[in-house]
Image (cartoon, rainbow, N blue to C red):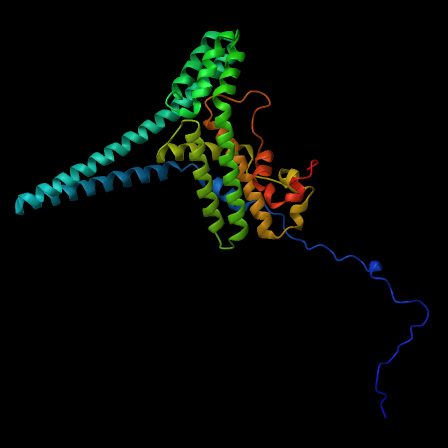
Length: 337
């Protein structure tokens, strides 16, 4: 008869091995996050169309304009012959539509002119500093004040500059004073826009697993960020101006290799090489956010009417930490982090 009840097994010799003596479980070999969404978005915006593509779109646009114009003319004149009242109503609506198109075109030209004006101001400031020309620096500050004279948020800076500019005896001091009084508040607003876009891109690309959705989200967020940074510095641009500005920023990033990012970019926030231990989507979100911060810094440098003086240029690492530190409260609160 089989014995019922617990069975005791005697271990001969040593006792059972301790859990601490067990070999460690090897880490999973996850591929390092590379920020694929931001890299694809940057290269898409920076890609220059070929001559054949430009010729195609130019001819296609001209042909479409001619066809639509001829069709509209035949439509209006035909209705005028059949029913003058209805025909002239359509003619008035067509004229109003053309006036609206003209207004949009003029607004685009004005936007391009504002961007050109800021570019010229930045170059003039650089030339004044290089030549140490105080008279040229005064002209630059006058143009800067004129650029922001209609903005209430720069009223204190303009009055402070007018009060202290007479005490400056060299071009460097005068340009630095204009930068501190007029542009410092604008720099803070632009950095907030970068931090907001960084947080948005990191969150969306980490949580949305749909293919190409993260690319679209990153592209949209970066376009909006660049446009808002341009508005902060007075370069409010239309569609063509915003696209030209975006292409200039992205082309610079691709040419300098700044669309590549490693663990060192997030080290102030996370510490060490922790990206290899994160989930794939979460790591991609962090890297895409870091690349967005780099885009934002480049956009600030392009849109700012005066180049940064030494030690005042924003750092992408600091903006990433500002945007994402809420996700890691223990690390962000560590004074050594």
